Image (tube, rainbow, N blue to C red; front, side, top):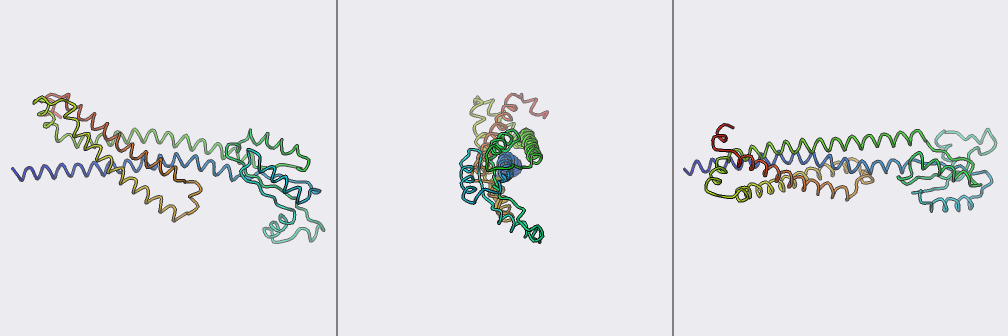
Length: 292
């Protein structure tokens, strides 16, 4: 008798470990998907805010006037960053890039002073840039405004498609994850279906019968969530060591939301699956239990 009990305990423990491992793997996938959806927004803003609008200034403008214009432009609601590049600085940069100085054979500096403006992400789109460009061109000190309109539209279109694809994948993965965890929980409860039926025969309420199964499911969900967060955190640390600049896209807010989502998924999904599985066996008769 003692040997049978020990074997039953070992089998139950193995089922719990298997359920915990399978739930952890599913939660890791869910966490990666939530993390990808959240960082896609930051990546979109990062890309948009690093697209540059070049404001070309007239030859007669002085350095002080250009710096005052740069300061005024910086105060605009659509400007994230603005910097002034003088004619001399532009000449030095272009000479270093080309390896030659055009002024040596032209006899004058062919470059113009410019303001390099980086927009806030909300204004980095075709419609906003159109009226911003008109506003800047209306200034007497400005001769022209240049930006890569095709690149801007392509970036916005690509990021919208990427966000939509990630959202669809997140929904599909949630459904698949629920199915996988549900199967794992149902298999762990399957071996105790006759115990459930016996408790029902002696008059135990359904709530009383469900309680220990749901408590164990919550415990498994918590342990699996901790393991999943540990795996995701290790992956994030490795990614940071490989590319430290990743912190410009990823913040503690995204990490905290991802961890909270993993814990919520782990507890809610395992609890619901346990609830449904126990209810299924509670509704069965003794004859039906032998047939499955």
